[in-house]
Image 1 (tube, helix red, strand yellow):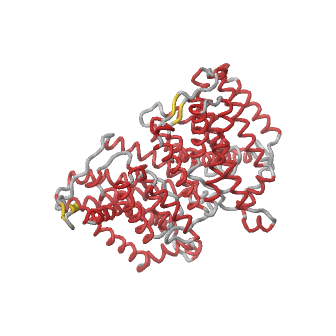
Image 2: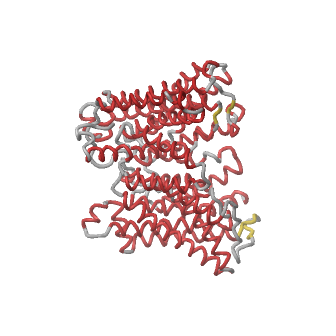
Image 3: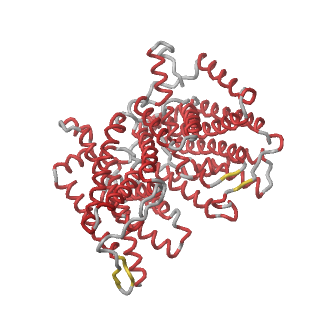
Length: 620
């Protein structure tokens, strides 16, 4: 009993940092509707800045002053990010803004590396709180008790600010009806900036206050990112009490998981999130209006027409150039183009459900990696011919998408996206921990194609045929009755259902179809590399696909292909430099600001303006 009590206290202490960071994210989303992936970077900056300040401000007063100043400094950095990066794209699709925040992540990562170096920094002990206190015979660190006491005070302060002050009234009004707040004469821009300052400061405060327990390192941003999103979603988007309850729930369960079921720690919080969302689709204390429909924003675009003669000629010319790559290019160019084609097919499969269906998935890599593992397992353990394994890869991925989609279709918006992430993490954990079958972290190697495809040129042509064929098939599906029904469900559920369309069934089938197409890309990938590792199912791979879809253009059928090819080419060029993330992040941010409709959408507008194409034509 004493040990259980001590573990509960440890969980409550761990929940403190998680709540501080998650509360800031909840505030920002509640008012601005921004899915801020850079929030973990603000947490990391709080730790590094707090560490630097503590070197010059000794003693107990200096320690707590450093924590406070770190929070304020990160809040000011958040203001700069909001004004320079996010304010210009507030009118863009809401989830397009996540691309901008991803660019911010890359910039901050390299700036932190330049400033503090690559070494992990060990946080100093908190003066006056270095000892332990025995409670029921179990030693409890004094700093843990201090954290447990401080967090409810911060929660009450935030509650008072939001519920009892004029600023709080405006914030609560903005969370419910931003247009009405603007109609009443409130300067929404500065209201958003103020909320972003507060949310960023909370993240910085969380990073600094955890220094005695964890220190500072360059992986902090991604290590906490999934956890804070899980906490915010479980608690309910925009709910501070919900975020606190969820932080306590996740932290306490994680402590018990480490003690009694270590294998569960990788996915425990995602299991909890999946269960909560299946019971309460909008979180413990969330409201339905925060779910949102993020795939389609604003008025629907003009109908997407089939390709005209000019576009058909352009595509034919590009195919000829691709076919000539092995003739005039080096082996390096053949391998690079193979990777680009595979990635474009993967991104195009995500675009089918996102751009046409308005279904934003944060876990689409589960089907890409799933297809790769299906093919690898068939070859490795069933001695299946490579050709048959490649055919069965989309079957396995599509079946997984069919099952996961059936569960996820109850939700919408961010809640839908996070539930797809939860299931993706469950599949990743299965692959990561089932070492005797999947190889675990060591992956599966020696998964090569058949002898007639053993050289890079032969496999390139196979990839070109299947990859381009898959993209054209997705395009054909977009112009089929199924594709039009999917767009109708995206644009107006009520009108679509009034015409007899079963919108949920159409979206469910689109989810499964997109998963199967991603599985084809995964099958091609495993045989091109000769190996597969759990990293291909991770969150980062899903975010890569999301980024290229938004960069290329959500409302254009060719957006995923153009975005995928552009990003892969830019990454190949930039990764040769030491601080390539900084440059890539700046490039992404500039594209988001200067071309908010994506590369293809912007190119189409420029072409129409200069008369290169007629306005009746559609560069899709």
